[in-house]
Amino acid sequence: MAAIVEAKNVVKTFMGVRVLDDVSLRIDPGEKVAMVGPNGAGKTTLVRSLLGFYHIDGGTIRVAGHDPIKARTDVLREVSFIPQLPPPVRLSVSELLTFIERSTGTPQARIVAQAEAMELDIRSHRHKPFFKLSGGMKQKLLIAIALARRSRLFVFDEPTANLDPAAREHFYRLLSSLDYEHATIFITHRVEEIEGLANRKVTMDLGKVVEDETL
Amino acid sequence: MKNIGLVAYLDIRESLRAKWFYVYAFVFGGLMGLFFISGITDSVVMGFTGLSRLLLVFIQVTIIILPIFILITTVKSIAGDRESNVLEYMLSFPVSLREYYWGKLLGRFATVFFPVIVALFVGVVWGLGKGGEMPWGMIFLYSALIFALCTLFLGIAFFISTLVKSHDVALGLSFTVWIVLLAFIDVALIGLMMQNRVSDELILTLAMLNPLEAFRIGAIALFDPELTVIGPVAYYLLDTLGHTLLMLYAVLYPVLLGIVFALLGFWAFKKRDLL
Image 1 (cartoon, rainbow over the protein chains, first blue to last red):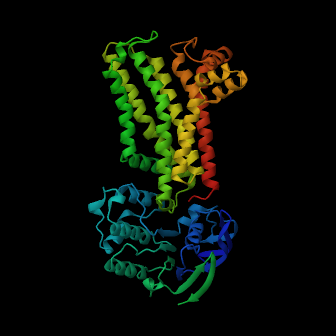
Image 2: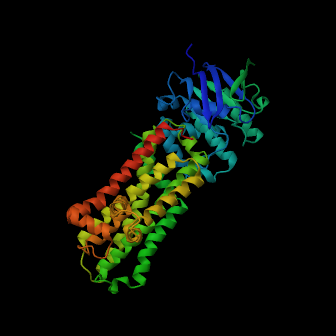
Image 3: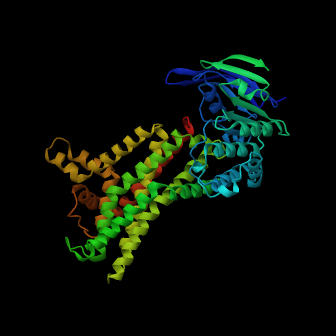
């Protein structure tokens, strides 16, 4: 089976400090990986390297068979990303959905339907700037966008940090109900938060993968 | 390249909602309003009067304040987007770096160019209403100069934004660029020349390379073909190039410089870490 993520001996250095130190990681379709570790362990750097934000100093990365730097758009067509904190995007909700529809081909109606499943009514907020929505609404919308894209790889950076317990339940239920094969990376500090969703735990510390276990 | 127009359109929409845009439009609109109120069209200084004088004063002030406005608002919003993780989110969608960079630049160009050009045309309409003649040559030249000014400083601003990650450093660098360009116009360099500390050739070269000098020359050349009211660089250029080439230098040199900086910025955007 072809891996969705294949990182081999990845090195990334910031100002002389090895933030990723010879990291190798393979993620296959169907795997739900909880990536844990303390602050500064290299989790975010690894994910940003997978998404083509960082030029690595050594090793190779392939996401869905593509190099994230050389074939950035091919990689990003296969990946949905949710940041830890919703960014203060100044576009209106409607403009943001237009951008997503045109750049990814995801119909807006599908995003609206996903949002409704999260108990978020987008229609009444279409003309509001995204950053003016409440923290919970922004996070729900980001989740709806990510799920509606039906990507082969989901990358969630503490996705439920801004959600109340009910919304968290909705998110887990929707994620579990995706009816096609995909892989997921959850970056989290508390693995118990995503208990039942992850089937593998990768622990990072000081830029290295220090533990890799099946749950 | 299908998303370049989309990115440009969304940047314009976003800018139209931003406070900096209102301040920017207010400053240039207000400037024109101030000229009307102060009766500039009725005064005569050095032979310039009416609509010509209004436009001349407008372009002279624009040359000083437009660069700092463009530099600061552009680096602030781009560096701000990077620091607040907006860039991270928007670039997590399959939009190529080429589409994103040039789309943003085009969108930003529209938002900085049109308020100034609209203010210029409002001035023209007002002047015509007071009985002046349509100064076609002047309108064409000043529109070209404003276009060149916007291209140059947007190019520099995008270059700074891709090179410097920190918001504060980018702002400081923008301010430094502006001050240096203002300092190296030939009027300021005359002092050095008079002290005989630096060779005349070096001073002339420095001033000629300064795009603000090119704008000053372009702005005044229609009124003072002998360039007697401006410094020695203008006079030297007029003597060497002739009038037509001098005007081309005033418009094309800054445009080319702006394109070079924008291309360098794009190269840095592609080759360096995005965040």
